[in-house]
Length: 422
Image 1 (cartoon, rainbow, N blue to C red):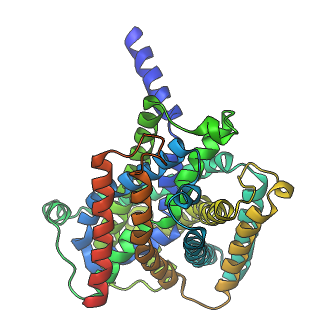
Image 2: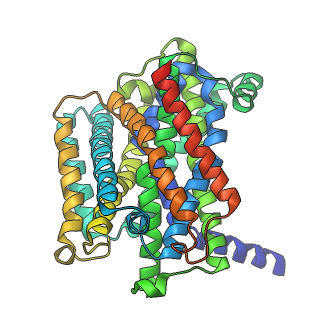
Image 3: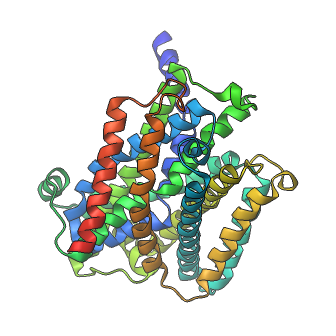
């Protein structure tokens, strides 16, 4: 009788320890990610499956390094970077982050609205405005963690891609070959796709968000003063390592099966270029039939509501720490006007971008490429901070962690160079 009780307590402990790492991992499969992975599967078939095996350890290493910076320094990423670099350079990084995130927000809203229009027939412009205002109000008035607990369940709809892959019944021998034996991209379009995959999986906004959420976690347990937040116990670090590893694993698992499913259902039937949300949703037809559009819409709206506060919030944290503003998603609006001003501004511009009549699928894809070009430069700064014993309170990242993030940086630079050269 004791064994089941022990297992239950271990399972409860596992889930209770899941926090910022899981939320950040779930936010990574945003509409931009879904569009990018769907485009990769449709265009290149199963040829890019190997990227999911590559990106999981790389993404986990980067996110854990950012988490460690937040936990050990007691500051968000901009604050830690400011210890190493001048304010003007951190400001440029914040502006670049805001620009990329705002475009991403606009593209995410367009993708969500396009999916809703496909299902209901109501003009997508109404949904863009509705979703944008609802997300902004929720970000300001509702604690993000409370909202995320609900929205994470909506994101589980994305596991429909896993089921669909088995329903279709692929040639598992070929799938295994393309999963474990990497093939270099051929041509500019394939290289650009690799940059997009890396950019939407290892995204700058996730770096800032992960570190800032560690600070928010510390504040939530009463460590309001910076001096109280400095340093982390071995247990705290191990718990976050498990949390980040779990979140990034499920993020990359979903990525793998979106690529596989679209390869089996779209690419296999000659649909190599996705131009509309409807085409992306058709990948779920073998599983859901006429309910495919409903499944797709619920999934993309759920992850959109989860990801957009992360996009606007990460930019707000970057600016707040750069310029010394009062910050925090738990702060009242009147106490952190500038912080929430960035959240409102980025979302309003994102809403406005929808009226520029930009194709949402293409916009989502190109924001992923933009993130892929920005990320390696930011990773250089993260590496320099994470290896500095003074900034890291004599708890710098391990050599293995530094090597993994260093490899990630080199690979992202190589992919970007390959895109321009070929």
